[in-house]
Amino acid sequence: MMLCSCSAITDQLSCKFSEIDCYRLDYSSIYNFTDSVEAHALSHNLQNPSTVLSQLTINKEFSIDSLDEAEKAILTNPEDIYVLGKSLIKDNKPREWLFVAEQAFLRSWNNLSR
Image (tube, rainbow, N blue to C red):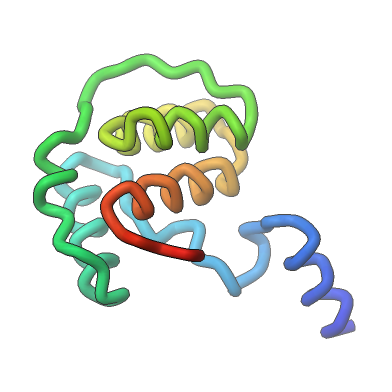
């Protein structure tokens, strides 16, 4: 049974398993979001996010229909991560979409291979 669980994780990204933290950033307010990004950066020895956090978009409309669209939106405009996250949550989109967008955001100001 354990082997099957590991296999499922490697074949497809899923927030149903504890191996990935799909709730690492807090979208309840812009202040909580910036605090959660700073805490995540500190706990994972990432670069200081001050510059990127000072450029965050606060108002923008999104219509995202896939994981790829979510990732591309942030690859193009990492400053939109907060409003994209709010939009995905409000529209009850899969949390995996947000996780992938967050990875693109983190990579935008860090040299990450993961």
